[in-house]
Image (cartoon, rainbow, N blue to C red):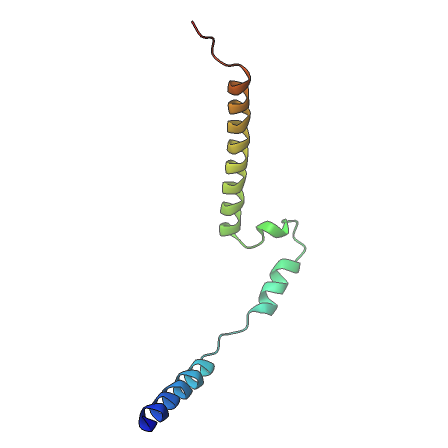
Length: 83
């Protein structure tokens, strides 16, 4: 029982210590320069092509949803006559 507990502690220590060794390059200053640059591009599009694609998709869904909602309201406002 004691041997199992010690083995478990050793594995836990090894896992934690190897996880802390992996470090990623800090790119915050590069991103700050990119987003603070005065180049006339809105901040929500400065991330590149992915931001532009997400923006366009959002606009298409918004306009399409609004048009569909207006269409459904119009159809509900004028019900079909019963013969």
